[in-house]
Image (cartoon, rainbow, N blue to C red; front, side):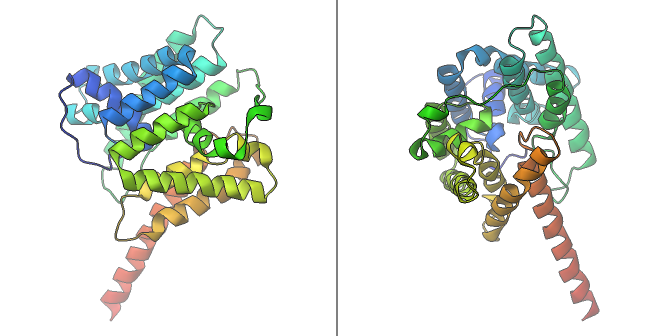
Length: 294
């Protein structure tokens, strides 16, 4: 993901800052403090998955270091965050397999290599960003071999918990306290981004309730993609409507992946962002052509 904030001053070691930034980059932020809150959210709500998340982040970081990728990029966390998500997914769906650690290391390393290749071929700000595409692509392959699981805990879910659950689902966490900690981390990193994330999550939940998809709404499963889409454009102050457009697209795209038999994951967020980026570029090109003709 691209860094939306300048690197803050930090007194922690380089390796620790890079790892924490990897956790915060899942939320499109570069903030070790935000990353620490995300790490605490995993520790409190899914302690058995914390090792997988850290292993995936380390695998991505060491792969980038071994292959000589830019230190500034390594420090920003862009080579680690897909590994974090892949580590969480593998820990959750393949927790009984002794091969899980090796699988996490392999996927974390390959995701870093894919991210580097993407950034090399799309270096300009106007190019389509990778976001969590490596995580989604590898996950779709992995989930072919995983046993299906059903959502649990509906009896204990309510509308008050839906918003923090939506933020927690960004990290595949289904505990409201995880969402609260993630929200606090976002507030510390960037208050504007935190407001947009909450708004995007609330819109996704409200739309699911309107569509009478109560399960998706109350478990937060309809909120995390719009939240991420809002975060992706929350920094564009010249065009404040872009986050709203991204939220709407992410909401409308979510049912399509289920219809195709694919796990939703963060795919609607990625596709929504790509459509917004492509639409903005097309609009700029059209305006430029009109000016040249006049």
